[in-house]
Figure 1: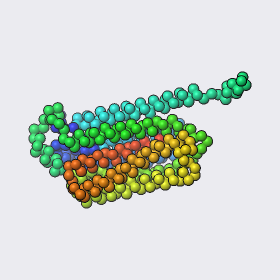
Figure 2: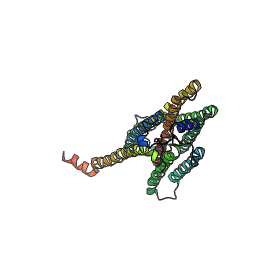
Figure 3: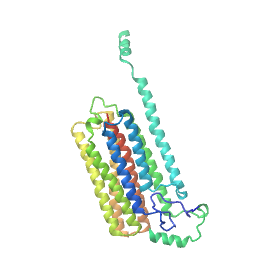
Length: 132
Length: 210
């Protein structure tokens, strides 16, 4: 196992305390990220506008593409990797993702239920009016 | 980068295990702290996203997203921000190898693309307000302006920060403090691009798809 003396700072292209290794061609990393991100963005815009796909599946497809592009940004631009020197950064990120998922999914779920319970069918409303 | 790496190597010849290495260098502590801040910023954006998702259908008889949004503008905005993220990465590489000309050039392109993004966004806001789609019109528009406006505000703050950092590079050169701040700036700028990915997908693409 190759371990760095210290953890790696988020955004650092190479581990501190070690010379640039063969695997790190930083320019190539950024350029790869740019092209992957462009590809995913273009696909997103195409998916949103095409009529070739099954419409109810489009939002899910867009969500998958967005999450994939966020992953590309994290790996190629912010250099968050699975390396041993990156554990702290990944754990902090995992906590952030957990909170984000709870906030968004929880809000949407609760408010959907609330909306469903608030809406009163029109004829029931009419009946209420008739009774009073 | 290479110079720092060489010094670090000389100092820590026998790589001790992380647990025995003593306190981490300030560069790593600072960047980690800033990473935590960015994640909390993303959590704040998550609340705005949740608000928007809840209120997106509450148009109160006013204009809907499909009537207001122009995908052409959004595509150009997206391209600007993505390209500026890339040039910000190139700037980080120039800083690493102590090339001041490359640093200034990278910063200039990053600033120009960020400013173009902001100008397009402000023009879009102005057009919407001109046709009566103000934040007061409906809950949907309140949520829209809060979410997209907050991201725009972050981009504006980032542009000011970039100018300040270039002044610091000019005045102090690549001092350790300046280099740490530049590392934080590039983290901030990349994080803004990540938020924009979620934003253009949820607001502009899902909003206009049938």
